[in-house]
Image (cartoon, rainbow, N blue to C red; front, side):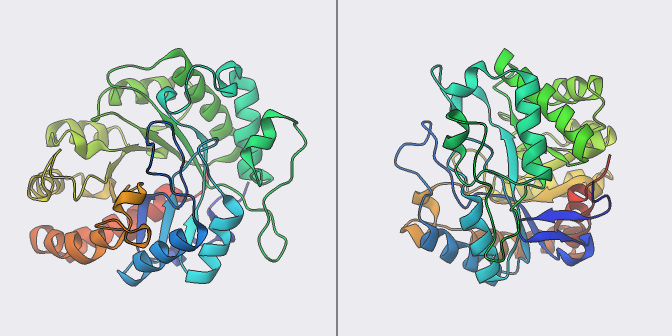
Length: 324
């Protein structure tokens, strides 16, 4: 284990070299839940990554887990071509993304843990689909021939529910975390079951300080967020540019309240745009540059530069560092 380092698709780096981090985006993603919104074009995704870089970010997390169209070799090429550092993800999303007849439905926790551990330590498969046919698959490689490895583990749970499928994923991720020291991201539906997820992971030996709760801001309850932060968990704020859910103004108020309550050292920021209809390079809007160009100036005016810099630099560097 490379304790004290961050594992990117181009190799291990010092946390201080990450710079400003967008903790949650997707360069590639294909899901039956999002028909017509596939991210599957390397040139377009690379152009979108360049827009994120130009908007003021130095690094990002590509949060697409196993089996949903991730393309680690293409991600490595995009990282090299744009100069944007990228931390790749392994794990398994919430059950609804896979369907009842998906091959992973029958994988037990031991098999999943072995896969997730290998993705972090040995390298991700060049093509995830190959793993459903044979345990011997080609490992994704950079242009220099180095294995492309994941640096983050991911799970997802439903709305006030943790299905048997999702519980198995969390158990497998816990084993992989103990094996690798990689941090864990958990997708929440409107921040429900947040304490329950932390309880389950704690029972498996995962400290809350190694967990980021994605989409925490979909329930803009500062009191809830402070209680999660007091346990040590990171709060993933990534709901910007979604006025049908909550306006940016409401999220600015939430962030200010959470910072004022002393939890600013547990907030990380991302866009989780995740759809071709919302990527400029795919012909949509507002794109990955929205966070840097349009939201962050407003956030700085509300909570100040020091608080925002913690969310962009210090907090994600601490979260993404390998170690137990």
